[in-house]
Amino acid sequence: MELAIQLTVQGLIIGCSYALIAIGLTMIFGLMDIANFAHGEFYVLGSYFAFTVAKMFTLFESVIANYFLGFIVGTFATIGFGVILDRLIFKRLRGEPLLTATMATIGLSIFLANSIQAIWGHWPRQMPSPFGLDPFIWGPVVMPPVRLFVLVVTGLCIAIFHFLLRHTRLGKAVRATFQNRESAALVGIEIDRVYRWSFATGAGMAAIAGIMLATFMPMDPVSGGFATLKAFIVVILGGMGTFVGAIVAGLGLGVMEALGGGFIASDYKDGFGFLFLILFLLFRPQGIFGEE
Amino acid sequence: MKVSRIFGGLVLTALLLAIPWIVPDDYILHLIIYAGFFVMLASGLNLLVGYMGQLSLGHGAFWGLGAYCSALLALKQGWPFWLGLPAGGLLAAVFAILLGRLILKVRGHRFVIITLAFQIIIQLVHYNWIGLTDGQNGLAGVPSPTLEIPGVGKIDFFSKTNFYYLILVFCVITVYVCYRVANSRVGRALEAIRENEPLAESVGVSAFRYSMIAFVLGAFFAGLAGSLYAHYTRYISPDVFDFLHIVEMLTMVLLGGRATILGPVIGALIFTGLPEALRFVPNPFWGLSWAPGHLVTSKALPAELQLMVFGLILLLGVVYMPEGIVPWVRKRFGRRPVAQAGEEAHPE
Image (tube, rainbow over all chains, first blue to last red; front, side, top):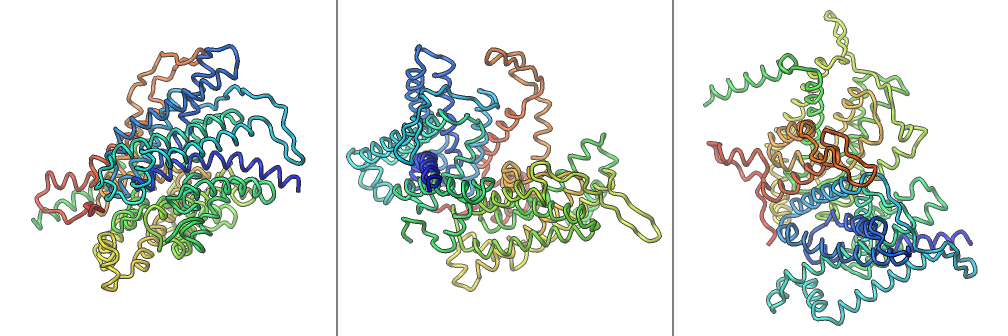
């Protein structure tokens, strides 16, 4: 039982990153109707931007200050990169057939993943961890500070995202475009602006996931492809194009993988998600929260 | 016109037969053989991706299944190549039928992701079922094919020249079958489904049935290619399931010219040759130092720069030349008007 609780907590942490990556993917998916295979590269890029600031520049004495400067710079640099990519590439892909758009993003993902290797080297890197190792203990739950940090920041991100979506003009425009592109354009919403900023926000969230995970996992320049895949599973399980679905399915997938890896077979840990995907397709093709 | 076509055919046949004598060294012949595997893979994939317009990312799984099936039968059961080869193809086809029953009713993005999920599950099994596949170590010592012809003697396909003729025969068979299928009721049905599925269904064209035919046929050829591949390289590992291989196959189909017979063939030749051509490009970073202690010493273009070029070509290719090379060349230089090959109705 204690093991199960511990695994669940661990799964939630990984699930947080799945959810953060999947929110951006859902947004690009729902708005532009593009399956962005390069989305996981934002997750890697963000962590490498932060790494560059925190480890290579080291402006401050304290590791914590360096890390948080890296966190902020990495996130905003990735958002800026997202804006540039949107201008250069994704603007052209909107309205293209699925085949073209998907293969173009696959090409982009290969290009980006290998650019990262060319710039930062193909060996894994380790971000200096800003947190101590003494865990917080509540009954059966043992939680190192890093993991608590991931939980809190993910909660904050989702709350901010929710606020932006609900209570700002741009958020309103995003929701309207999400529901119906043509009608939104008809009532004078600047669609291109909506696309640009939602794309960049999605990139930023993936970057935050990458920067947080880098504190307790080595950074692997080729992990972007796998992150994309996991996020796609989450998007489909959650029911394509619902944010609540992406968050719940993201956390759920993390927990499921941790429990399955701990109790059934650790070698097949990464396979459970794909298996669930096929099972869902058989019995509930519209996902958890989707409507057909 | 007629005479020139016959003449052209004869020249092409003579050229294909003479290739082992034309190419200067063994390595280029090796690349041509490699391109042969991809001709089989891309041509089969073209049925589903080109003619029906469904993007499958699971084709590499069938290739790997064929390779592992044939290699394991040869190594553990001592089956001869000529039984292992059809077994590889059939196993891939059986998997395609089972998978197809689950997924061929799905369309669009879901189809893309689910075919990829299938591929990854198969790959995980091959990595982790150590008792059968020996995991990451792979299977070594797969025997080369031999052929006994009474009265002629034994032909050993260990030599590259002999294997070239073997793969040539299979490429010709694959391309011919794809050509016949594409120009039959099946091909026309697939194109009808691609252009307008509800309309095609309403006149009685069963999308499920025809997509199953395309899917299973493509998987069968991929299985055969896998078996040939295993007996050619004589060593296979779960790396045959690498995502990059699927992207290569799709690039060959899309940039070669989808829904054309020649497109995947030309695509296979170009994109097998491309990485080799890139090797002669000098490394622009040679002698530079990124970080202290990391001096760039390789004069050849490193792998990541090669792949950057490949990714860029794929990205720019599908955006700026969406119809692919073969239809583009035909449009530019051809006399005959091309049938509506790569052109798809925009979904607006």
